[in-house]
Image (tube, rainbow, N blue to C red; front, side, top):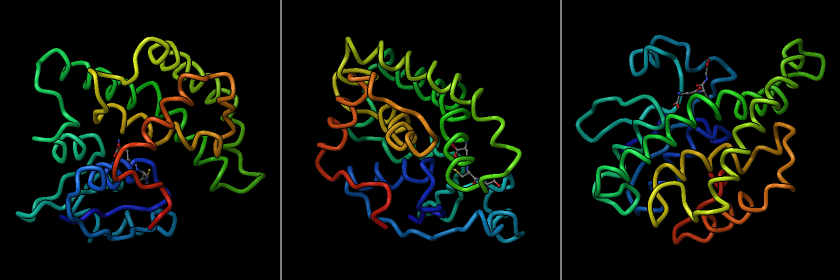
Length: 200
Ligand SMILES: N[C@@H](CCC(=O)N[C@@H](CS)C(=O)NCC(=O)O)C(=O)O
C-alpha cells in the first residue's frame, strides 16, 4: 500500500500511526499541498477533492478521507472492535472528530503554523479557539471516566482524535487544565509501535 500524504498533516499521520501500530508495510509518497501538488490533474485523478491523505490499495484503487483509511486499515485488528455497539461508539467519535474537532483544531494549527503573521485569516483564530476548547471539554469529560474513547482498548477513534489533539499547542491551545487528555496522550504514546508525527 502507499500513502500520498504530507508529513506535517495530522490527517495523514493518522494512517501512518495505525500502520506502524499494526505492523502493516507501506510506502509514503510526500505531497506538498502548500506548493499546490494536490491541485494538479495527476493528483486529482486519485482524489477529485484535492486533499491528502489518499491511500492506494494493493489492487490499485485510491481511497481518500483519513477516517475511511483508518477503517480500512483497522479491519481484523484490535483497533476495530467486534461488537456492534462499540463499533457505533467508534463511529460516534470519528464523526465528532470530523465535525466538531478537526475543523477548529486543525484549522487553527494551519493558520498559526503555516500562514504569515499578517494574514487576514488570523482573525478567525478566536472563534476557532472557542470551538476547539468546546471539543476538548467534551473529550476531557469522557476521558475522566474512561481510558479510551470506545471500548476497553485503543481504537481508531483514539487515533483519529489524537492526531490533531496532541499538536494543538501549535494552534495556540493550552491543555494544561485538561489532565485526562494529557494522561490519554501518554497512554497512546505508550502503545507498542507508536511513532511520533514528524519521524519521517
Ligand atoms: N476530511 C479529510 C480532510 C483532508 C484535508 O483537509 N487535508 C488537507 C491537509 S490536512 C489538505 O489536503 N488540504 C489541501 C487543500 O485543501 O488544498 C480527511 O480527513 O482526510
